[in-house]
Image 1 (spheres, helix red, strand yellow):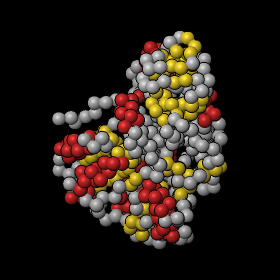
Image 2 (cartoon, rainbow, N blue to C red; image 1 turned 180 degrees about the vertical axis):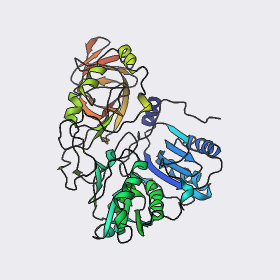
Image 3 (cartoon, rainbow, N blue to C red; image 1 turned 45 degrees about the vertical axis):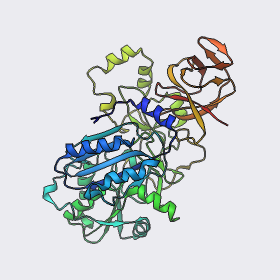
Image 4 (tube, one colour; image 1 turned 60 degrees about the horizontal axis):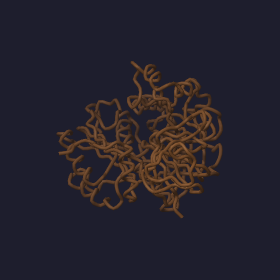
Length: 451
């Protein structure tokens, strides 16, 4: 009985591409008493693995918190797997505004102490005594009330790229940090102000609203389904968006655009920008905002130190990392002295710019066929090396190179070297090289654009 992943992210991405089926990115949560989280976890893995459902899911005695990617043609079957459990009958599934077939490439279900690390002792207050849920139109109406205080219960790296107009945006790295800070900041407004709160998908507000009611706040409201559901409703009902910018999401997209406003800056040069990236140095992986120009110049690195490090021999890089907590064990969120234009805490409501050009890190919707995979990148000469696994590639072909860090970039092949020599057409099994105007990663795939 299979209870864990057997495929790598790269192998899964290739299978998804070959299948050519649309997938839906979605999220949901439910608070419930689960007596045996491990048994519950294993049941879910068996059911979802059979449907090719992928994602990052946390289960605990208090419930479930899930962000997932599900094949569109298995959507109803997936919903049926939830309906088996009484506490998930009729559960709201927050479907992403922007879809990406590669949003999740593994099915990871972990048993945790809590489904959200809130630092609260649930035995000290009634977690079911929650705030009033508001839909998008109701939320907008209350937001315009001068007697309302609106609070963003997300972290600084989330609110920096997008937030509701006039919101208090705490300069915190974790949800648990924000609760005592907001409680102290709003002590004088418990009786006479509307406390309006929101987060990404609603789960943080479920607990926060009950906590603040316990702290004595009389009028507590929360955005139903969070920003994800708000975005869907304003689009379907043609409602004005009071949210400006991007909604940060926790898959490789790192953001969904809600409006075309850019409210943040590249952390390196100060240019209006709201594209998050992770530092390419395996000993860093700092999450920060980087424009396309700095991305090219700094080769996806956050500092000159990291840029120098990635050009060292791999053995030397490994020695530098020895004894450090690195790789997938860390997730640093944009706090570094090297980032000169980092903003957090008190954020502007007025946009710095509008989106005017296509974001190369967003999904490019084109008909394409997988040709090969990256094998090497020669930094000084800016030459990419690929192995042709499928089909052929000729001079003049339009191609798309895609990867979690590289994004999706298309250009026309003007010169090819196959197996060390120049050629007009490369065939299956050929090892090819050609010049590219951007850095290539080993996780990148090469596609030929059709038509």
